[in-house]
Picture 1: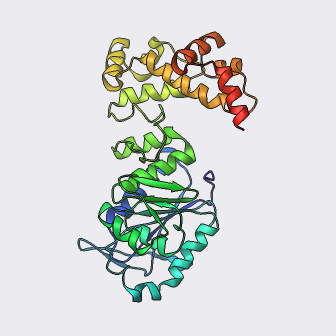
Picture 2 (picture 1 turned 90 degrees about the vertical axis):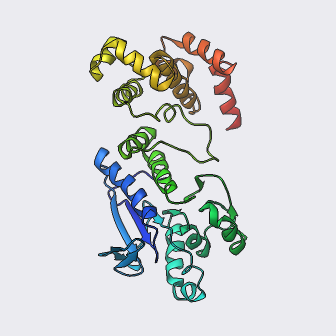
Picture 3 (picture 1 turned 180 degrees about the horizontal axis):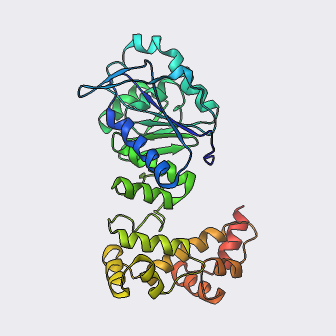
Length: 329
């Protein structure tokens, strides 16, 4: 997925009978990213018309007509969900062929295409979900599979990912998907900063690999501990002493240690070791990596400490991992 550029946009398409949270939730996540880290995303909301009545007596206005937007490879499109009645109408499908062609054209251009809840129907109608895994609201999963048999509808997961196409299960999971995409583009630190800003827990798809240690141990609301975690991650190769860490977050060492263990179930040293081991595994996968250099980059006292911990945790040496990666490559 491309890194954000000055031209990067997040475009939200609001279909008729929009479910408001499908749009507002992920939009707020990207606004938080802009506010926290000042990433230069441009956020636009488009629709079939310039104004749109919404459930709950709400009304959206000043919308951009979707056909005025041409999606490029750096852009992200979120297609929000809605009540299904209009989407099932043959007249709606017939009259809005240009909309489905627009979605497909954006996909072909390399834009990241996402659906929230029943927005998956629009992606399926555009033909970009054929042969791909797909999530939608649980109550509509069987209907979606019946109407679009080429789509692999997955039940019981938050979202799916296949190339530049993402689909989410519904409503609140749109926030999870938005945070996941921010993590892919900018790393896990921004992902949990946005989650913390929105006061939500980081959740991952049922199809995802085991959670990263950078995402684990973040489902708490203790700001002091979060700040200590940030410092440990940022200074992995030059770890501060416990006294300095406590000073940096404005706490006593005893208070910080107590709250850290209370929120994470780990001591500060144990958490730091988990960070180092995961970082080491990542670096060892890079071509031409050397155990000595990896040990230094991860803040180990030397290669012997890395080897001992690696053997204890994974039952093999770091060099075995390097050779395994080389062979598989």
